[in-house]
Image (cartoon, rainbow, N blue to C red; front, side):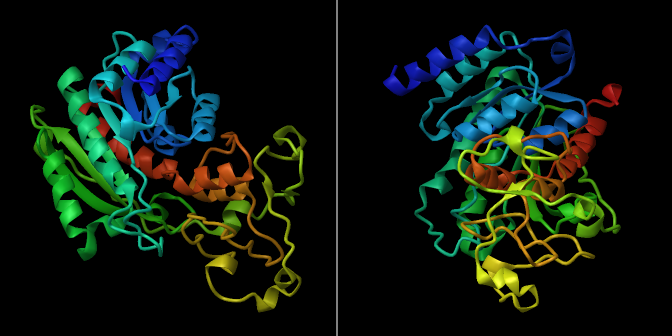
Amino acid sequence: MTYYEQNQYDRLAAAQTNAKITPARLKSLQLISVFSGAGGMDHGFHQAGFRTIFSADNNEAAVNTFNYNFTGEVSHCVDLGKIYAKNYLEMIEAVSPKCKPKGIIGGPPCQGVSRGNIQSKSSDPRNRLMTTYTRLLNAVEEEYGIDFFVFENVPDLQSIRNAGRFKSLMGALRQRFVVYNKILNAADFGVPQNRERLFIIGINKNHRQAEKFKFPLGNEIRVSVRQTIKSLPNPAFFMRGIRGEDIPHHPNHWTMNPKSSRFSAPGKLPAGRSFRRLDWDQPSHTVAYGHREIHVHPNGTRRLSIYEAMLLQGFNPNFRLLGNLSEQVTQVSNAVAPPVALAIATSIKRLLYPGHM
């Protein structure tokens, strides 16, 4: 066992005694979450009646967020690209002994294939994490005989420049599952945001319903930025030493100081990603922020707060992100919109577990 693996085992052994294996968790439809981030996809699946019994991500702030918002210390900081499948399965058993997971959900980092990343390269090491997903998925299926998986990524994964990678991915996923894929827009599911993402769903070939999965349809009703954040009070601005408890209304209702002189003349904000201003009466642009690219509030005088971005992602108002401002920006940007996850989870549940509806 390497030093890295031993360190993970030590942390998990300590966490096992703190894990809250309640009767409700044991009776629910159990999930394993991989590349889980702050838990946006888990949030939606939990609303549909599933429960995560083991989660892993390499971002410590996101792991802390996950454990803060969900029952039990089930999320752990793990570099999944370095872990052997055998050791991964042992970690699951250490956190949730005698578990019976029904599925595995997650979305590997997508920056290496995203058109939005102007510096993306085919050699980006993050591209290999999609292979990590399939490797761990097949190991979990062999160990537990799971019924389904959900894989989320950017639509660009299906682009011509990524054709070889996408073909290889689909081939690996089809080893044990009947596979379906579709690009869904979060705006079709009540999320006040135009956010297209690729979802790949797999139903175990041994399941009698494997050939019958259908993606949720959504609807044409659009929720606007105004309907979502207009009534909020002004946020706090970042200052050294500020804590979530010091921020009025919600611990994440804070943002960067509007130091640029461009904010003093909001009618003349320049075009481009750095000063992209939202329209009150339309859904938000995609919540996917880079350095100093948080969207400008519709009033033009500041950027959105983290909490406003969370609401535009469809998070429950009581959800809280932990970490510093930069870490919270990363978490809200990378999250799967929970209402989309809820719709997918409901479709899976209706097909595979009608007795739990």
